[in-house]
Length: 143
Ligand code: CMP
Image (cartoon, rainbow, N blue to C red; front, side, top):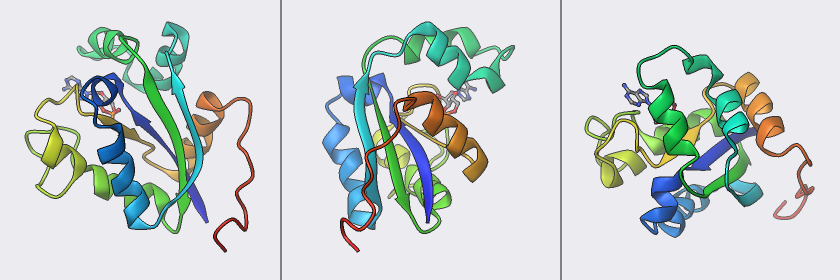
């Protein structure tokens, strides 16, 4: 069983798309293992996007992620990392195929509604970063 960190970024909250996007992960059959609304401090955003430091869009990306509340979620299930990335679609909303979250709902490359971990290893790091308090045990909830 795999876990992945999903962020519904400030544009998703501002555009009232939290239910629409969360429903897609739920309907796929993934299990919700963590959920909270976070006003990300700058330090958290810096840690989360450390790999992008030095890129031309880095400062703008940090300003975006800290611009309003983010919904942080942990989803688990078989191949959860890859399954969530498939559901999200390509990073650039303009290039993401129809049927995906970004393909259906985003046009921007930066304001692309969702973030999903790109590997099980990074998922573990990102879950620990966004949920330092740990997760409620949901083992056995839906067998
Ligand atoms: P995410 O999947 O969270 O990973 C890194 C984020 O950086 C990405 O989604 C976008 O929000 C943003 N991003 C990636 N490439 C660009 C780009 N070329 N210009 C602006 N923002 C970008």
